[in-house]
Amino acid sequence: MGTLYEIMEKLLPFSWIEYNFMKNALLAIIIITPLFGILGTMVVNNRMAFFSDALGHSALTGIAVGTIFGISDTNISMVLYAIIFALLLNFIKRRKTLSTDTVISVFSSFSMAIGLMILSRGGNFSRYSSLLLGDILSITVREIGLLCIIFLITLAYWFLSFNRLHSVGVNVSLARSKNIKSSLMEDSFSILIALIVMLSIKWIGILIINALLILPAAASRNIASNMREYHLFSVLIAIFSGINGLILSYYMGTATGPTVVIIAAILFFITLFLNPTKSK
Image (cartoon, one colour):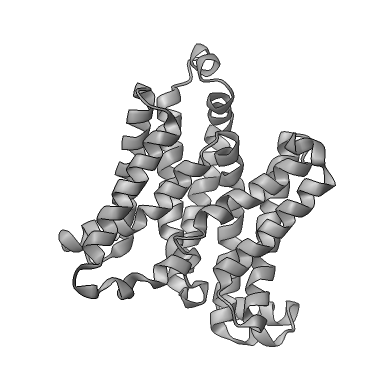
């Protein structure tokens, strides 16, 4: 890691890169943002923005459940709860007794209320308030290694499942006619989103993680003319927003997560005006 830091200092001769916490944050941004750029394209295509937002808010309930069962590692409890939450949402959604957005809204509101009620007992919620905005500057070398593993898992899943997942997103009936197990694809993708969202929430923040997942893909969709451009632009916009948000937050003394999201939002509006026909 020391050699990598030296290379970064040579390539980026700026004052902010002299600090180890900024180097760690930069490495984390370079890993996290492409993940969100890649997954965001399918989230936007499949109209799952509300779903991913509900997952983010369920993090508090995952922590609350962990405290009840004595799970000291909040990451484990958050991931386990998010996976159950996602699979249960998919199960009820397939029953089609209610519209998808209604089901998600009910589950999200109920889940978050339970989490807040449990964590706020005795006025202890302040211990978890840092999760609302996240803190990328606190990430450690070990956690960066974990992100690298998640990145490789995501790439492997993407290469193996993209065509089938895309088919399900375009037309479920058509996908089934091609012997694609739509339920399996939906559930596996939901689990992947749950895993990445929960393991990133500590650094990105509950309130803004969905925005970082959606905005790069939405901006890319405004200007992309084919699927290849759509994915490429989404990843580039995510990386650009992440790196510049990190640097800008350092000089302005602001929280990194919200600063990244603001840059991504500005890029969304720029791309929207560059090609207004995409919004029609």
